[in-house]
Length: 275
DNA sequence: AGGTTGACCTGGACGC
DNA sequence: TGCGTCCAGGTCAACC
Image (cartoon, rainbow, N blue to C red; front, side, top):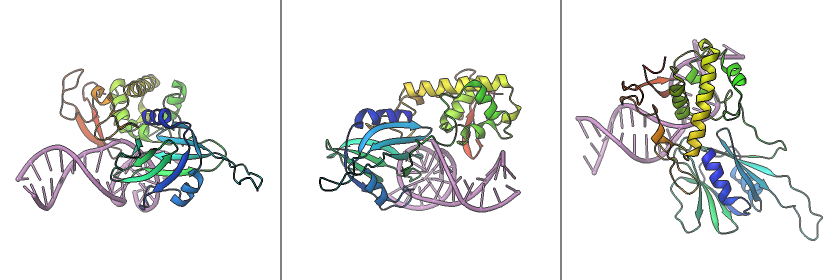
């Protein structure tokens, strides 16, 4: 999400939205498409940023009314994009064919288009009109302190993997980075969070921060279809130690990586390196 | 209240 | 070719 947000920001910040189009599928829209169109048309993209797993597009809007009527200020809005599992946010020239499963198009003043494409329709689009800025449900994994991190998990009677994926605690850790951080911290994903020592929770805090920063540096993990705003894949998947490596040898000790289901998700770990 | 499970969707990979 | 099965960067509502 960080890679997508910074890439889209670099490409479209300052552009005016001259027209919008939305698909007829109901799933992607938490705000009705008509209301979204009304709020976005004529607005200017001030900034594109990441909040947890959400991408927030800040839209500044011109005053309402013309020469005859006294102009009325319109407050800025936030266009909230969640990519779900297969969502993409692409910036394309208008003559590039629109991919299948495109659900939203923002036509920009310079002729390019910002497109939201999502085959599985797990992604969501919404509009926020309220004054205060969107912060999301939990704490930011990249800025949380070690002490806050320990406090968040020390009383959770659930596998540490499930706790890491709980977005109301930490906002923005997904399945790949949960598995990779647990490997680097040497912690078995099934371990009850409340039974980990403060020392080990601190190690996990460090490992998570390092994994996320390394992934951002390499443009994200492209396991099957993740791409950035230009449709370019990331490279962090080449650094994965356990994710989707079930049956393959551990890069540290050589024994076979195991794949199990924890918290309803495919979970990968080394039985020797993670205790 | 906190924890766990299945449902929501489509498509790609693989086996027969 | 074609059909069935498993798998998937994530939430949610509905259960225990």
